[in-house]
Amino acid sequence: MSNILAESVGAARYVSAPSGMVLISSGPFLMGSDEGSDAERPVREVWLERFYMDESLVTNLQFSKFVVETSYQTTAERAGGAWGCSGGQYSLVDGLCWRTYATPDRGQHPVVLVSWYDAQAFAEWAGKQLPTEAQWEKAARGGMVARYPWGDEPPTNHCNFAQPPADLPGTSPVKSFSPNPYSLYDMVGNVWQWSADSYGPYQVSMDESDSNPPSSLRVRRGGAWNVIQPFRLRCSNRGAMDASSAVPNVGFRCVMNA
Image 1: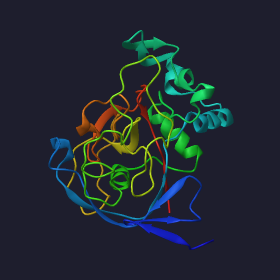
Image 2: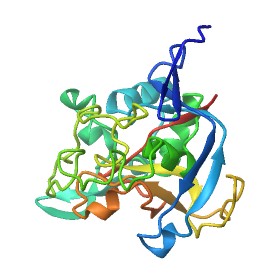
Image 3: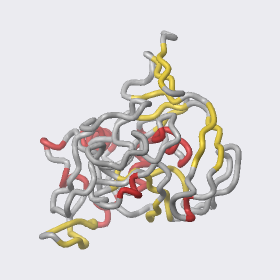
């Protein structure tokens, strides 16, 4: 195994890293923000051991391979429908599922209409995990202390956001925008991303061992194509969704122990 590596603002990317993944090095970072809502406070120093993270969101093509190999049925498929846009209005749409948007020309778009359980099932099949909140935020910050993955400049053409409601989700192919300093794409914008963690208040800690009690609410991070408020695209912004929810603006990426 090659030991050749490149240092990039506190992250190490090994030539021998798993395909499509980036190695985030061990060390502390400042998590949270005093600028946002109470849910983002307090700012605290968190230490993480190194880990690999997918450089891109999981795509329709990747999810399709998982489904073909396992005959997996998503939460929406078992329910017979999902929440989506039809005729300019959002409602529960019969028969709507991830396949609806996974047309041949959208293979490189992030998969959507996947619940937390669906994302977890994919991660297990791939030999990976969903990222903890701490892993996600450290990766999104790219070694910087800044509001966004690119710095403090308000978002303009940095990511996919502020798209209007449409019957076809306004996602963009992965890697359509510049990566952050850790060479990670779409850390904010495009789709919200499931994390491994239950939603609840932060606890003051110097490590990642504290966690909230198991809950049906799971943390989502990163903003999405239809977000219009820039504050939702900040690295520290947190949201909560029921683990069984499957909607057109939520997807995921995975991590792996290093």
